[in-house]
Length: 379
Image 1 (cartoon, rainbow, N blue to C red):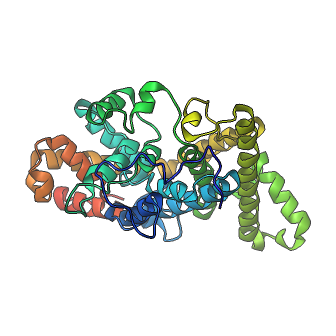
Image 2 (spheres, helix red, strand yellow):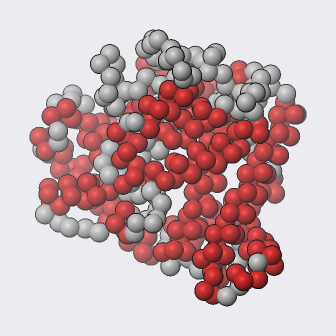
Image 3 (cartoon, helix red, strand yellow):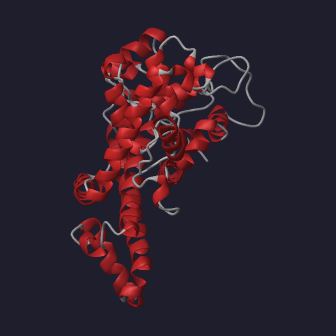
């Protein structure tokens, strides 16, 4: 595939933190993707919460299935825009490696526990995973990924953390947050594909759980237009017994509309600003985006999910118990570091070692550890 001049280039990559010979058959970005897929942190994603906790059902999304869906959506958009699909896939597969057990509930609890020790950001933790915490190679810690992949993983970062990154790596992954410039188009795309993916599959999982009904979804024009059109074209989907198939068709069409909207809207912005290199992209405003009309519909979808799913009493009850678990695990390991593996217990910065250990846990391992240390069985 011919890449556009504004696309990232594996041949002109800014390279790795530790020099390595090139692979004979793979580009640097393909190599990054492969290292991510083979990492321990990636395997753990299969047992980490998206919205519904791992024990609540085998068919609900996990962080791993979410990451795969983000990669699929992002590649679908990358190809017609002439972007580097391998870089897009690497960023998408790695973007949630730093997520805690129990989803955002676990992250919020761990950030609270770390308030006096630098806080906790899951995006920064994803970068820590690939830069430091994975231990697979004899010559360095981490996965030694390309700069472009690492920069794309760090999609949000506080100024304080960006300054800390800049001190340890001048001009590195944190620099753009200080300069207020944009990352690559591939990184921008993964950020938007993330939102498209979780909105769609949270609708699907919400209906499967019984917390959202198809009737409630009819308030959403973005979904309802496609549901109605699907019934017009396939009248056999109208009966209640076919609602699951109708839901899937509505979501599929909704996803397609969003994908094509991003391709068209981004094409218009690219034509307006005419970036002729990856570096030129950095000086532009964000270029990968929805049209204004689709952006409004996406905001409406987010509000709907927040009201009907994320703040549902059943979800909030699990959230409260999950946060209790994370807090009690943190304090237990602080009191007795020997309860952790030696490579964590022996570290000088104990609070960060505890945070790293907890963040790396799966839902079910965290629950087992909590029961072992406290004698309580929650969830």
